[in-house]
Image (cartoon, rainbow, N blue to C red; front, side, top):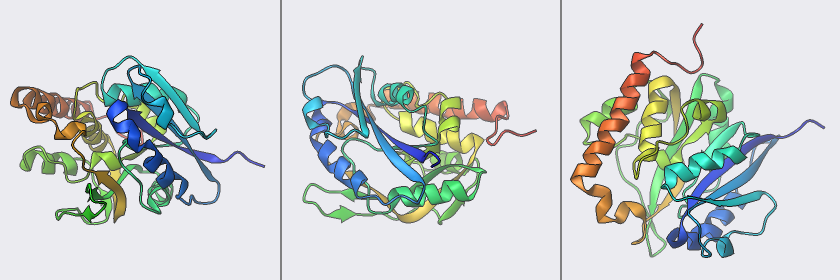
Length: 255
């Protein structure tokens, strides 16, 4: 029997968000993958504490490690060391959940067209009372051409047209870009813009993520929108994407 193809879900976690890991786990277990595929879940704590491990489910398909604190981008990139047998990488924040069918739709997009390097999907906010809330402005379902996310981001006050928390990426492409940017925040936006610079993507119009809104989330803290740091983050995110474009690096590689 041939080996199964593998999608690895990568999650960065810190003590405040660890309480939500069982919800994330249930949403992963509820996924139905296409024939020939299996999942593994790689969880990386951003730091060393005794507060996260008790929330990690007991499942042989899950790998959990800790490391020096450096933010979620560093944690996710360190987790890549345990994902070398993956063909596809799916990001899932510790406090978010996957709706039914999310992984299957990602895999369908990436396996159908080798020129597609990454996929994203529609998001619903998951509110504290358990209800969900959507928003207008999603792109049309289908291919996302190179450079279009950057154009939208620049024209809309650094708001991307697709949500980086929904990214599903070919492993070799993610590795070639160095993983997530080593920034205190916006590390996933930096990766999204880099991906859109070098490769075509895909947007699925069906909901692929429930994005939890709660007081402890990092993006709800005042430091996240502090102008000096935010401006610096946006500047380096854009500069990296433009440098990749200037060097004309492309995926798939051009002859």
